[in-house]
Length: 421
Image 1 (cartoon, rainbow, N blue to C red):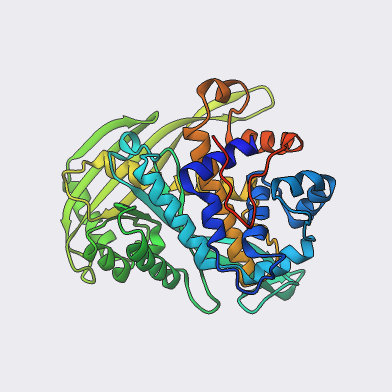
Image 2 (tube, one colour):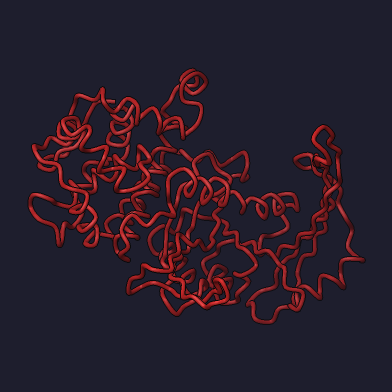
């Protein structure tokens, strides 16, 4: 299965060629960057959870690794982790941009059903890991109380942009939140870079309440992009204006995903003076039934409710149900993004505690996530998905289990070898 996956990536995305184009600065001739990065790509396709796991796997299957990489030598895990400190972060980012552009050209995303023909992306912050003992020059710090004593905790966090409401929710870009700055500062850098490098890949940006910032929203407005932001802070002028208009607004009742939803649409709100243009508000009141266990043998159905408010610049040609779906679709980034990456691919693990190494591993994990997702959705036959590979975790398990059966070269440093699909 690894051979088939690598062949797909090489035929459609020219993976070997792009690996050869990494800058290779700070590496040796023997342990060059394409060679080291290819090892890490293979490891992440198998979802190996740490460098120690990778080391054990390499030395138990050293002959197969040498054959795959067309090499008489396999580096130690200490060498690999040390060399990731010199990784070409810009090269990995550009590689991801090229792959995303290729997917878009090949209509991989299949956006028409859930997102009404629009490319929708969610932007949110994510903390990868924390430690009370290990730190580096770029670590952020905070103080917490342990057993009545204050302890300094070190951590890294990032802003991630990911496509949502599409068949292949690729990671678009990642930006580290540097020490001493907030999430919004990093998000502004991220959005500006997306406009510079991938300006056509996103039509609608969905944000949490933290991103209700006039500078970000005005920037999106100038670039002719739509935005949807959750409104939670009751002290904002927009929240108060909605409270005043809500009793006078006609409601629209419908049923969405087994929920009874009551929607209110308020166009042309002007209660927030920092925005360059007027905006629109959509409010939803939701009711649905869930099972609750009250004893070992008995469960009852209870009613749950939710109240949501979104601000957006999308015109009224997009009805309230679309705003509702996009607003709730932001959680797609949590479910198919951070949740899957953290729980199944070890996105939050510090493979080597160095700022460049951490960023390099995040990009390698993200690129392999994007490629394997595309491979699973577009290349595997329905019968194989039904009987053998029912989800992407099983795909990684099959790659891991069939690794010992591999016989052909899939990557060589000297030449970019292309295997037939």
